[in-house]
Image (cartoon, rainbow, N blue to C red):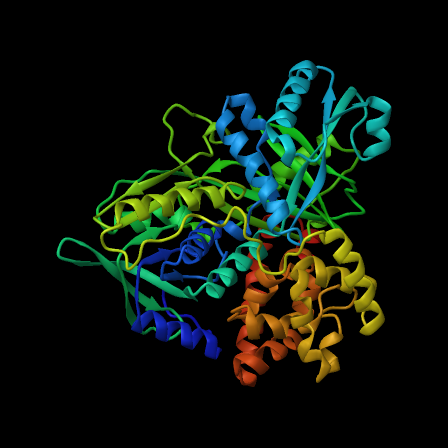
Length: 562
């Protein structure tokens, strides 16, 4: 069980949510506030069920903020003949592009082909043609063959010796943590009661069936019982731990994946460049002023909450970069890292972690208790639909009402609007004209919050300081920190730095330097005194240091970072 943590801020909204969790009886309680749990809560709430969701950390603080951020059908899964998984992924990709255009956007992928390489160009073209056809009307255009010279012009950083040709196609990219948050907020819009930093310790049983959850508020240490007619565990890599509490066998093969972040001038690509290294696909992903590279795939047996990139992980990724690009990068060039644990379903027939299926299952436990396991970011909506369908069918006799059908495949997320590109251009121009902010800050606001960017700036009418960037040169404004505390359920400084914004991942050193100012803005809403602001700053700087701990095994020059 998690120990109490020093999170002094208690927003009234969180207090209201906790009171609802104590007072009401719910049709469904969801354990886990990652991408899958968030989709489950939204789906069930939109069907008219009463829903509770508890997350023992922050929303998306596990795997759902530590992915490669790619929304894709899974082209490489065709190699393993996982046709239905690819088809579903492409369908879900198309839906997400429509449902959340501010958070999910198309991005080009480049696949180089080398002499003597593992990839057969003819088979690759057949696979890409199948990928295009399966996408159908939800596709983003056909793939294109690129000659050697075109590839060199497209991506001059690519190693050119042995380069034969290549392909370019489109998939999509997102901000995984903010996508998860949007789903959580949408679930609350439809009546769900949700709370972060509340741990589900055990099932409450009455008369041989599930009747709720025994929980603990990690902020205060108080215990509470959430009464519910059914429970879905969506605990990601903690699934075996959760199910083990009521005697269920382990089902997961957890694998670790890490990413390293480099300044984009060191590794500049205009598309996502995909390549293989040691039988594992890696991606170089452009992200504003940075590029991130990953992901590794190794078995993991430790605490999913304690996973970090170590020196061996980072060296593997840097070796792959140096072998495949015209660069020479070292650990001293790495500005940040992130690591997560994939909750894959164990498959005895797959000796390699990379070969383990990304499929998913809904498992039954004690009467009224279920768990959803496996899957990936792209397919999480479909996973949730299947899980809620199963609960609705099996528990029809105990639910408070006969629910409607699934609506999440058609209902836009908060901040979405039709014809988003046109809206974006008009909104950015209006922000630059009407507010004293840069073009970059205006674009960031619209891309991050969609139509809700107006709400983000509301406090700045009374406090112009909030229009200033959180760190010099950043498009992120102090107004976003204030909004995170007021309306996005941020409870700590790290909640904002890592999951409400990207500052911890893409501006770690600068964000440490500015952490006192940012914490002060959060503290105005969260009620922190000077001592509590200091505690938040210290905790955040320690978290950044842990993220960069791999440098402890490197040279002195590599130790100079944050």
